[in-house]
Image (cartoon, rainbow, N blue to C red; front, side, top):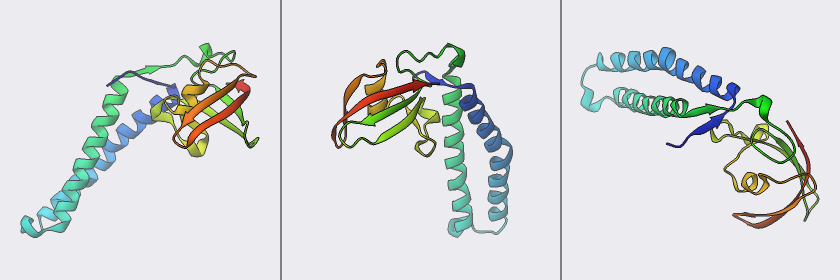
Length: 156
């Protein structure tokens, strides 16, 4: 797996999720498996099958999170500038076609959350904005075609 850049906040959020899965979910699922096993014949026991499936999904998620953490590199937020677009910048852009104004914060894949206005630096829009300056106009290829944006502001 490639190196994953993340903020300290994102790193701590993943650590908290790992702790939750190990200390709360794992024992809950083990108890469900034990309870289902106590009900007898496992060959026709839907509760047992569901608990084993949940265990497999949870363990896979746990392994994925641990792998992400092991390859994480924390970003020194004090070194983030606003001269040109880079990770952790909040970028205000104007869609040249319809004048819609949008603001996005560029973050790592693991911290992306569109509801919070955080997009991954690996998305087509973020890739098209990287390295650009206020006033620059960029044409970005997205699945629906080409979109043109003007960079209005770069902040932290």
